[in-house]
Length: 189
Image (tube, rainbow, N blue to C red):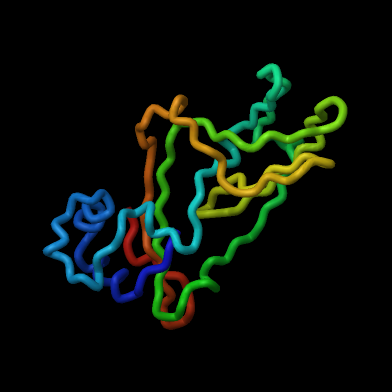
């Protein structure tokens, strides 16, 4: 998620979805695009937020003993008994009045590995606490805590061994504010 000039947002809205998608894929001849409206690869437009996160509702956490690699338990992230708190992120306040927000999402199969926790005693899954943020009507894991242990924050590490390299789905769009201060989607694919 990143900010781009609103004039660039409207340029791409007028140019059309096909050309915008080709630009994002790096397949568009940049000689046909005015320099002020050229954009980086979609995943590099990330001055507001960038993440590789597990989606709440379709993911789970496997807890393993780091010394023996023994699986201790699996915690489903959509389970009603899982402790999840939700942060409300408002990146709009970080964007200048002449800027719009570009959003890009790709959903891929894979594993995300987090840091090891060192705990005293037996592992208790009820002591796991998750924090998630909403983005585009979905919640994503952003923090993992275990009561009494250090906190992990940030992205997991994508395991390419479990990733088949195929994007399962993707979505790109640009939002701007209209004259009344309401969000307006300029282009969406």
